[in-house]
Image (cartoon, rainbow, N blue to C red):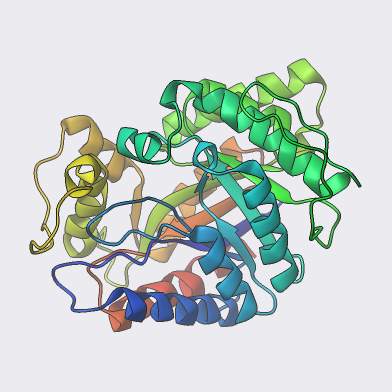
Amino acid sequence: MAVTFGYGLVTGERHAAVERTSGELYRDALDLARRAEALGLDSIWTSEHHFVDTGHLPSPVLMTAAMGAVTSRIHVATGVVLGPLQHPLHLAEDAATADLISDGRFILGIGLGWSGIEFRAFGMDRHARARALEELLDVLDGAAREDVLRHHGSLWDLPEVVVRPKPPRGRLEIWLGGSAEPSIRRAARRADGVLLHSPIEQFRGQVAAIRDEMDRIGRDPSTLQIGVYLTVVPTRDGTDGWGEYGDLVLFQQWKYRDMRASSTRAGQPLPTGGPLPPEDEALARGCFIGGSPESVAERLQAYADAAGGNLHVVARDYLPGLTPERQAELLERFATEVPPLFR
C-alpha cells in the first residue's frame, strides 16, 4: 500500500504575465525535470495540444524523451498523447525510442482527445476516436511484442513489418486518461494505469466503475495503477492558496474553452482569460487542494483510501504565468512538504 508522487502537466505554454519564449520554456521544462528528480519525486508528466496561441506543447513524446535524457531515476510520462491523432506505427517507434533513451522509465499516457479543430486538422473522424484508440492499443502491443506485426483493422490495414526499435522491457507501459465511464472501463481492461482528474466524490465513482469492470473480466485490481492529477498547493500560513494561484488555475481551465478560437489567432497579444461556465470553475476548484501540508495530506489521503491505498498523485502545479523562479519554488514546496507525510 503506497502513495507515490509526480509533477506536471508540463505544457510549455507562454503567458502574457511572463516574458519567455517557447525555447526558453522548453529549456525550463528540462530544468524542472532535473529538479523533480533531485527532490525525490517519482514521475514528471507532459501534455499535448495543437494550434494553441500560448504554444501548448504539441510533441509530448519528444519532450518526455528529452527529460529522460537529462535524468537517471524519475519516470518520464506523457499525460496524455492524443491517441487517435497518431499514426500507430509512428507512435510505436517514437515511444520505444523514448523508452530506450530513458532506460525503461518511459510511461506512455494516452487519451481520446476532444478538440474538433485538432481532429479536422489531422484528418481524423472525431466520431471514430474510440475505435481508433482500440486499434492503436492493438498495434502498440503487437509492435512491441511480435517479431512481425500483423494488423488488419477497420481504420488501419497495415502491411506485415518488423517494428524497430523494441522497448527495453519488451513492452510499453501504457496508462489511459479520461473521465467518462467508457474510457475508464477501457483502462480497466487494457492499460497498466489510469490517470484521472476529478473532485473526490466523482473520483470515488470512477474507482467503483474501474473495480466493477476488473471484477467483470477477472483482472486482479493490484495490476492496475490508479493516478490522479490535482493542483496541490501546500502553504506555510495555512491559507488555502487560492488567492495566490486561483487566477492561474482558472486561466488554465479557460484556455481549453479558447482552443478553437486561438487556432486561427495570429499577430495578437496573448489573451489574459475570460469568464468560465459555472461547471468549469467548479471543476477547477474541486481539483485544487491547498492549505497547510497536513490538511493537504488529509485530503489526498481521502483519494488514496478511495483507490484502495495505492495511488499515484500528480501535482498539476505547472502553471503558465509563474516565473521560472516561482515555478521552481512551488515545485520544491510540494515535493519537500507533502510526500514525507506519507512515508
